[in-house]
Amino acid sequence: MATIGWFAMPEITKPLKICPSREGHIFFAKDYGYRLGFVSKSGDLAMSNQLAFLPQSPASASIQFDSRQRLLSMGASSLTTQELLSVLSGKPEVAEWLWLLLNEHDRPFHVLRDITLEQLQSVSGIGPYKAATILAAVELGRRSFNPVDNQLVVLDDPAIAASVLSADLMWQSVEKFAVLFLDVKHRLIGKKVTAVGTATEVLAHPRDIFKAAIDARATRIIVAHNHPSNGLNPSHQDIELTRQILAGADVLGIPVLDHLILGNGNHLSIRQHDPSLWATSEV
Image (tube, rainbow, N blue to C red; front, top):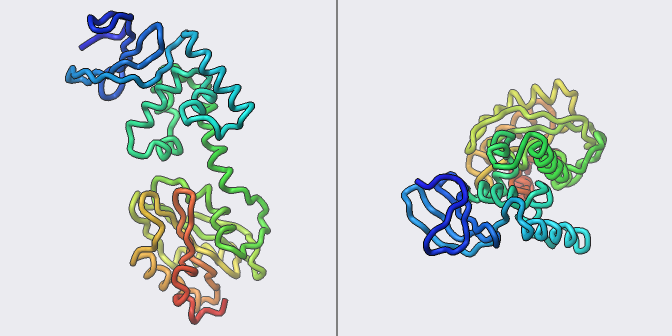
């Protein structure tokens, strides 16, 4: 196994730096800033001409400067994901390692949304303060999907209700069940996550849902849960739970306006998807 440090290989004329990754080692050309190859733990060498950025390299500083200038002149949307990470981290070589960490998974942006302090600090060059900066930026991104702050907002559209619940349900790695509490004019008076499950299911009971509604003095409710990994289409279990909740609503006189499914930036209204479920409802 090669060791970390500068060394020369016969087939490459420039000195190389070996840097560890989960699967093996990545080789960098010291003078040019190009990733030349990847060596697995078994010793196999795979050559690549993908661009990488090296510590203290003039090319690295130039790329970082160009990224910031392009962001200022053309907007953040003009930058690649790795360039955005470079601007955020302050060091292109750190952005390279962070991007490699994310791409060890099938859905890198899901990893970024749920990334932890420990994962960030495992990247060479990221200390606690830089990790805190990145975590704060990720959290701001999450909160940007929840622009509704007014507790008395009128929930007269599924999109508004989904926006209120976004921070609680939209980007979660496990299924959760939540309730929005409304007054007689459909104004939001509160919300609560009533159940937390696994990555594929959550056990929500109508008893807990209506107890929370009564405690909140709600006269109307909207229920919702998330699908972390699958599509938004309701499952058979989702439809049956909706029927049970609507039956409880008829007995207690607390109308259920909708059952929403959230996930990955989108939402689905079961009431719009299957309006027949509400055929006998008064609202």
